[in-house]
Image (cartoon, rainbow, N blue to C red; front, side, top):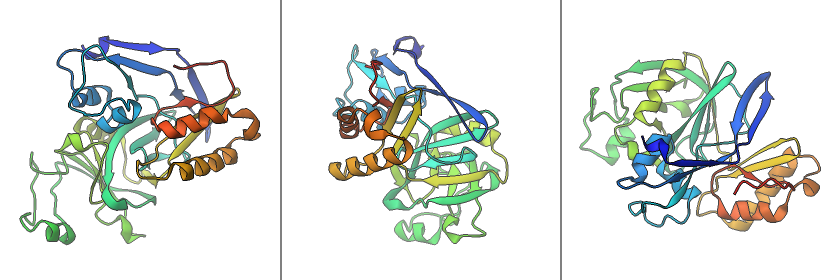
Length: 295
């Protein structure tokens, strides 16, 4: 099995409770040693991450088609929770990643989201669930591609995949035609590529579809920095886009941290903070003054 060839260093489990629900967050780093015949898509689907997440965590990867047996990669399988109510589905466009909270646990999946900010932020709920959905391309999409048929039946050519969750647009038209669904283009996961819909790997949407109920709350945010504090240990996770100004990133992240962490100026190692923002690896990093070293 592929997973036999990994190294997990410094096991550190963080527990915390929000809204009377306890969730387990892992902030240890999992390293994988590349084997012959591996490729990034194979690794991404095996570890349920996106290719772009692997690239961000491993900036030494210049060409996604060139990885070498024996090299060690950080597998970005651990995540801090976004700053949102832990209820139902929470989608963070900045990662991009979906979190689903149910009872005392949660699931998280890599996703693809809208290009050019076409996925709206805000609150809605699941209106409808459909297995083997039919896709009716909106007029705006058919204008872009006149070759599209008026109706795409269920099957391998259907971009919705085998499962679709429809969002409630009755109170706000911005949710019209925004779905959470599978895809027949799994390599697109991790990208900003859709017309607003949220795509999941086929295996992930099947799991989510089985658990989600009608009227499940859906919250979509765009949170570029996440933070967690417990027992004087502070972790942050950065998800800035490549075209953002680095100094503006640091200022915004500094402000956000000090809103969330009391006495932040004394608790945080600001050199480590600046390094974390600059590297923008998309993984939890310890930034408090501590002897703990996760490298």
